[in-house]
Length: 197
Image (cartoon, rainbow, N blue to C red):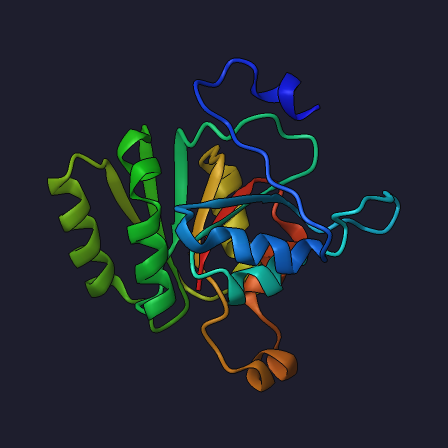
């Protein structure tokens, strides 16, 4: 299967080991620029890699993670939504996603909530515009929808095929009590997500 899927590539390497898939993957990403995986399985598919939790990988990889919905063959990245909040994780996600952002037709920076961070979004989009990225800021006042739902609604309205976001910016206890935008997006996003912690 590996040979068939990579026959048109100039270079591809296959690695295997007799150890758990998560530990093996983390070990192999020392020099990786990006790791790609599927959304978590719902238990109906029996696969050796079903215990690869994107949430755990995000916390341990040290590089960005591109999470694709099941059944997706390619990520075009033509229209991208960046979920912006002026945090270390979001800044890293923007830096890590620049190869995608530079090739996109349109990039939408969305800030959600009453204390929208429009000024920091203006700074980052101005910097990206100088690099040839076509950016637009969309500020959304917090309405009845959860933050993750607002982000996904904008992505659907704009025909986005990639979502870029920082991941797990709060302490675990905070996220356990109040919920997590990251967890919501991992569970419900119909499009690919590039996340960085």
